[in-house]
Length: 604
Ligand code: GDP
Ligand code: MG
Image (tube, rainbow, N blue to C red; front, side, top):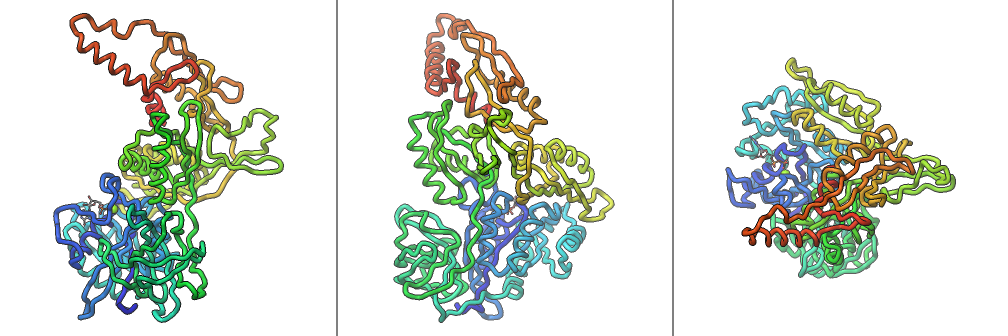
């Protein structure tokens, strides 16, 4: 395929606006996959968790053939995740494209992530094709949403394609627009080989499988190539396109997107953003990517401490498919040996946890998420990613000058009826610089965009759930990095029977310490089973007790209520007890069942 017959594009949208559905229709219409209207194939969502949650986590790609004016074209669709946590994946998959289909739900209208993905695409200089999806819905309001697109993005209403991805209406026009409006990739097929490595996965038998975009030259099976990043040399074993499964082609031309395998054994060798070139040819590396920045950290521990090697192995294997997760060993007196993982956001963390449980059959405990704090001393600044390492700032001998926390610039889009609720929510989470403006001027329930600066630690707790419930599900939310700001924070510890539980330590803003202390102490009181002795439960900052509850002692024999004759039941009960014994975690003299930890940490 010569360059001028290739189009590399992506579909960008707010979550649920129909990206996967449209991708399926495009693949069907071009005969890439069999037609299955009515069923929800979602071919590109390969991971189980993606199918279950209906979100795309890892970018996938698929090539299709489409004949236009008698000419066969090669269209490469590079799918991108739609969630705020995966912005890094979005920008890296977009760098292999020249254009993007920008999908907006005709009934929901412009949402928070519509804005962020649009801006990323625009910054990358992509040709944007605006598409109004779901016009079949009775609640669709194409005129109003087109007006929103015009006022928010300066899109010409005449350029907007109106489709129903579900019913397959208008999809033909999309293919036509891709060919006509998106410029073909540029690339010199006779020049030196430059291949941008933009994604990779690991295969037990073949080693690392990398996705590449050929910027210039040709990549052939048998070629000797080298990495600009590591200078390591490889021999190309297999090359081909994703159609949507791998199809070997023996060669990739400029503009093409495809997979390669070479003798790359370790996933860490496939450096995202790396440039591959032919051995002996000198090339300037292509502009790479800004590496993902972990903004949410949590400790992960095996339920059964003896499983640690297995857990670590599972984490290692999973991080091969998701390189944005950072891993560090950590040990806790309450939970034993574990790992501290860094994630891009809380959804990212949830998805990783589910994948860890699904794909590797591991039972895990995950501690409350924390953000990276900056602790400034006279002569140095350190980052604290684990609450247990946070200094006792209330103690003058700690020599801490100040503490800074990460903040984000948040935007919330909501019908105006909920504006008051949303402002209240933001205030309760220490938001500043609140501002709002109207997205449209509809008489009935106009859309408002609310922006503010808010500490990231507030966002990673239950902010999103509260946002959804207080707006009846109508609000959409997105944020971008807003740097660091000085903040009045302290470490809160929890003591059971005067012994600190390190896994429960957390960082609080001083204005909220009483409230947080009380809530947690109550929560602990509820989930910790009574012991044979009295157990004080305390929340402390430095030496000061902020909140306290007392667990009264238990005396009764557990089997006392089970009278004779019910031997089997009694046996079963003892069995259960034995079972749960195994999962006990001992904190000093207090035995804590695993479930108590799950409850506490989940309820955060
Ligand atoms: P994604 O999150 O952007 O990938 O969105 P999906 O493709 O998973 O679609 C989200 C939901 O919207 C699914 O339940 C789809 O069936 C539905 N959907 C997608 N396109 C249309 C459409 O054109 N009309 C209607 N009525 N529903 C659609
Ligand atoms: Mg999807």
